[in-house]
Length: 221
Image (cartoon, rainbow, N blue to C red; front, side, top):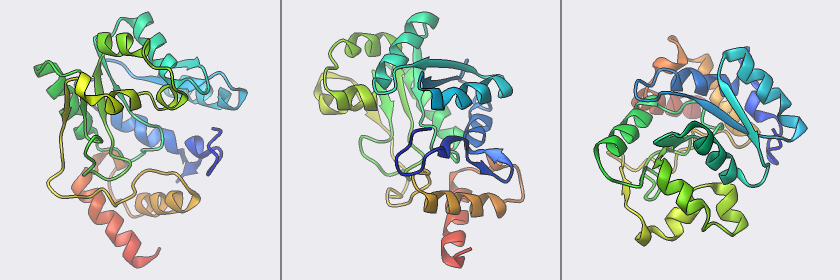
């Protein structure tokens, strides 16, 4: 909730619904995800996120504001998960099919990290990272720089030669498209996309979202 460019954006309402709910509605439809945990901070501004989690029936863990990686480590140790998918709360239109794809690849192979951001071809807001739990716990002890602790997976990319990383790519380069919500302008575009939908938002997959995005951008409304 302390976003510098758009404070409170996580729970900003679009068509009467908090932005974060658009994402949770998508992830709950993933067949290969056993549990969902919203990992937020102990900062009092994030009390609202814990309240939202309770309202929608999703577990919530609260930890350090700046050391985000420590939240993941604590969750892994408490739940003894084999692996996890890291998803950012500013991605309300994330295609759940990408989550399924990453999890399947991780389950069927011996990769440490399955990602689509090492070489970015998907739009921002469609980022997925699936990691083995044991590898993350071991690697956490090597994270010393603030950037690594804040951005959770940055250490893996900085030392990619030390890990088995699989990057999957889109059929075309869509990396210049912004589907995440970082600014007020991004929220306006997201709101217009939602307003143009004729089906539940979670029913729109990436190809349809791209067409919708283009239509909204061209019309300017």
